[in-house]
Amino acid sequence: MTPPSSLLEIDQMIRAQVQENIHLDYKASTAISLKARDEIAKDVSAFANSDGGVLIYGVEERDHLPVRIDDGVDDSICSREWIENVITSRITPKVDDARVLPFPIAPGRSAYVISIPKSVRGPHQAADKKFYKRHNFKSEPMEEYEINDVRNRRDRVSPIVTFEIWDYRRFIAAFDVANISDVVAEDVEFEFIPEIPWTERGKPRLFSKGIRRFAPRQRFRFLYFAFHEILSGAKKVPGEFAVHISYYHPTLGRRLRDEWPVNFEAYRDSLAVRPEMEEQAKEMVEGLKKLCDHVKALNKSLERFFPIAGSTGLDLSIPVLRNLKRIVAEGEDPAPIHPEACEPAVIRELLGTSREMTSSIWKILGMRYDPGRLRDIPGMTDELMTRIRKAFVLEPDPDFPRVENQPDGE
Image 1: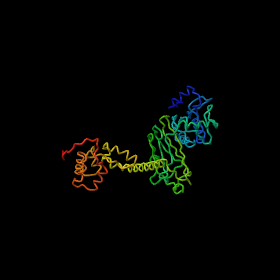
Image 2: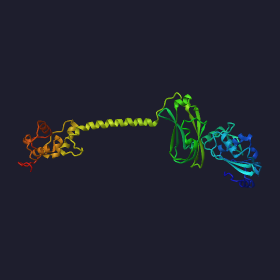
Image 3: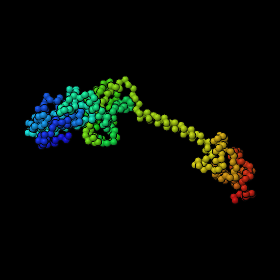
Image 4: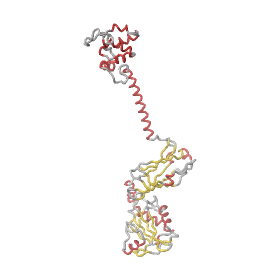
């Protein structure tokens, strides 16, 4: 129900004779006292474990109907802050977003309205270690199945801010805080119970001041002490502690509180586990090494084609292409080719000669086909003649038309 927002609205409820119900409970001012802490905690936890509701202190009731506004609670004894402290300290886990509103009745005396939302992080235990529910105008102990039902509410509302222990370089503890959702977590606050010691850098600002807007998928990581320092007791870090994270959930439209237990003792006598990312990186390095070895092997196999291919590896003549089968399939050297069909570039590529020497050889073999005059070329050597015989067929191609007796230079 919507809680009253003023003393006038409380008075209107009295005149309208709004009856107590599963969501509403009237209490006289005497119900708030130093001796009534456990009773307050019981009533608040009962509403949180049920469907939420409103407690109004300062209203006398008879047969579950409001009668009048009484003299009010003495603010000097039981203030708003005192009531809030009772709710937070005597209920486990803490109730999210319970609000205490004071309405002055007279100087130093007030009526109090406590608005309790339905909890999705229960069940909540009162100071007497029992779980209560709202039933028949009062708070009653819960059955086991009812406790389990409240506990199952967690599965329907997953946390959006997480806290985990992470090992940095496999021997330093680190705190990993992340918004794992697709919505903004607002007014995020952290509480360590019990409080833990910090490094010489001090408590990180995120934990001491909180964060107003925690963006979706954003992650923070803070280095802590080394595991051996923690487990040896040298840094006086508790073996076990809890981190309470409270935040406003924009989808639910209310605050939530999640508890994340930390147990460093569980790491004792254990081996550091290689993080998943490190394992993936190792696999990538091994994969890249295999790829490099494969490329090297492929490059070595292509070396046999270097005498055939040009500088670009693409300018291959038709005669050269015909030799690929011989080289690839049979593992033989390129077969000699008829020079009549060759351009000067082919001759130069196969023989590795200078431009001047290539031009002279081409005029004899490519233009006139007169191999007998090769020895007359200035600078001709036995080694070059051997390469010519290996690369070219020095017999005329009967299918290739030639110009007979063409003078040099024409």
